[in-house]
Length: 435
Image (cartoon, rainbow, N blue to C red):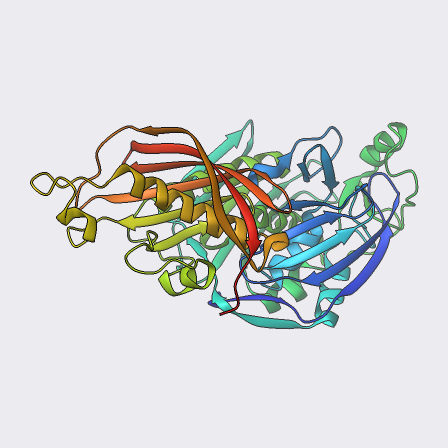
């Protein structure tokens, strides 16, 4: 059962270890984060710290790597185990500082991260969690691999994974898993990365994993583990499910429904994530979608009040993008004097709605907490179709640039599939007045 409230840790905790592939030592610090922050990696070894939010938009494909994220050509590699741990503990908001490119491996499972995060303590936050309920089948495949997201339970996630290897020590393994915190900790988190003995030799020849001995990961010969003992008789399929959980965390939403996979790996998992992300965007355009921020939460971020508060709710917001809703009714005060015989929403009010959504987006960024966005300029403003009473404006703001005192965004407002208006808007970020 997925809980409704967002969660973060209570206090900072640290862990260190060598990267799985590169072997470079990495010191990691897990810090609590405010509501709606999401999970953010921070490369502290850069000239100035670089924040890399966990998002499908930041997935990066790197040669001889598993799951990587990047922003502004700065990378974090092999993130799936730590993300699986965070998702398994139902953590929504977390800041992960690291001083190297590759996440610490420790024992090649998610268990060390689970243990350190549990030592930090977990606290429930005030905001509701955004859960994506799978409404329609989504399927991807490549060769003899496939993965599907299917409608199922609306309050939990079920995963079925079938693994098939020619190596007799692995063979065919099938496991159904009801996702939940306790199940994850006991049944998935201890499962380690595995590879065949021939694959281990190939990796070494490429200069990867040369710091590892056969006792540091689960290396399989035809007869069984070369040095280690199995933690589960089917540890291989459990690790594949754990990897899948870490990849699903890239979506930035908890998921309810059912995932069925056959021999799927990271690349195919990422393709499913992109399709799920597109389904979420489609859902954001539906008026039945539950808000991430209702009008009360919006008023905590914006100084505007009736009749100039132009955003009714926000259905999605992350580090770089926000989607908001404005329901246009005949009761809007400007309709009494603006073409009263043919009511049209003034274009300047549509632009004002886009500006207000952008203001919430920029004031929600961690570095802009406690600041208010004040309009500086508008550019490339285009009004493309009339907006009338009864229309619903779906407004999207994308951050193009954000600095300590200024912000720049591109905005669109749609009615259905039609663009009603678009503009580029620049802001000055000033300290908020005390309430």
